Each structure stands twice: as structure tokens, then as C-alpha cells.
Length: 331
Image 1 (cartoon, rainbow, N blue to C red):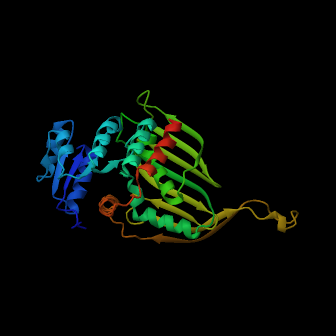
Image 2 (image 1 turned 45 degrees about the vertical axis):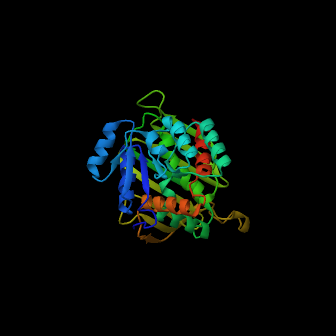
């Protein structure tokens, strides 16, 4: 869907690696044509321009910063360099989309938030699952109480790569699932236990297991970039029904099972005659088909609309700070 309000504006994409390329492709799809690209490694810029011919390469980040005709900045850059370059862009009044996690040092994030508060501004962070139509349907199902009280949620996010050398797997992978939790429940769980395995490199964890509790709901997040099979699933156990979301199953991604398990209420019966074992109830299976639009395009359109209307984006800096602060306490 083309965004006619913004396709004449100039946009800068900072960082021309894998995700910078994906963002650029989505910008082109919605009709943005004036795209400047910049990467510290000039070769990355050349590779991206070869892929999309009409891009304009900038050899200088400072040049883009000082160009008042380029108001929109999309950062797909490593957290280790973000504090300096994003701070400069904020001071220059650029409208900023920053791919998560953005920052991993809480002190840096606090300084960015203080600057944004002083300037009465927000920036948007790229938590793509908050703009996934299936995730938003799951949010509505949970809030409607159709599943009953939520007893347990399990997230599995595993694949062989991409392997990061700058952040732990929890920052790169588990942050997605924490953003889903925050988006649905408007709060984060309390940590019960966290287990990390630095398999390939001493100071970088490749596998992360978070065990948590949110009110009366137990939550597990299992993340790994060392799994031979790609897995992206969410299991939700409710008192009335169960839900299973398999993001990679394009034909049958979301299923709601009319099944549950519970112990009988022994207070209502004579314990001598009632089986006290847990009872399993099984009913029908319902597959939910959704015309799932591109979450990234949904996200980018939300960014432009928020900037146009001068409104706080859904995944703003305060939203992201809660996730990074949580992860910082356990890493």
C-alpha cells in the first residue's frame, strides 16, 4: 500500500546490512522513492544500491544529519554505535525509527530518554510483532476471555543463525517475545529463573531460557540461534481453551483448541467416591485464517502516521526502555 503523504519525502536508511536491506525494500513497496543510504562500511552501501538501483549513497553521515530536507531516519545499526549517532539525530530534530534493541546499556538509554523528554519528542523502535495481525488477533482473544484465565504461555524462537557477535540471544531473540507480552498485557512478568548458555563464544550467550510469572500466569521464553530447525511458536493454555500459533505454517498458523485440563473441585463432593485425578476435556479444533499483511509495512506506516500527527508511536522509547531494562537486569 503506497503512502501518498510521504512518498515525496527524503528518507535516510542508516545501516545497509541484512535488516537495512529489508527496511529499504519495504520503503520502496509503499512508494518511498527518495532514499539515501549510509553504512560505515561503504561496500555494504554499494551492495544495497546494486540490489535497488534508484537508491542514493551518502558517503557522510554528517552530511545527512545537516540536510534539512531529509527528515526521516531509519536506523538498522549495531547497539554498540547507536548512542552517539542516534543522539546526534535527535538533536538535529530528525524523526527516528530505530530497530530493536537499539541500546543495551541502560545508562545510555536513560540519557536518550532524558534528552527526548527535554525536547518533548519520541522515537519509534522496531518491535515488529506488535504490528503482526495474528498477534493482534491473539491479543483480542485473550482480552475477550474466550480462553478463560490464562494459566501458561510458552514462546519458542529458534533457528540456526543469524548469530550476533555484539549482543546475547536474549537481547536479539527474547526481546521479540517480551514485546508481545508487553503489547498484550501492558506489563512485563517477574523473573523466576534465567539460564543462558554461551556455547560458541565465552561472553555471548547463544541459548536463553527465561522462566517468569505474570500475576497468576507462568511464562517460558526459549530462544536459540543454534537450532537446526527454524521454530517460531506460541502456546497459550487457558482454563477454557488452548491456543497454538505457528508463525511459519502459512496455511494453518493459528489454532484454537476446545480442550483443557483441570482437577475436580473436591470441596463439592464426598472424597470417598470421587476420582481426584486431573480430568482432560477435549472438543473441537478451530483454525483461524487471517489475511496477514506485512508486519514491517504495518510498522513503517504506523511510524509515518505517528510522525505526521505528532503522536506517540506504539513502540516508543518508553516502551522499549521497559524491555531493555528487564533484560539488563538479567544479563
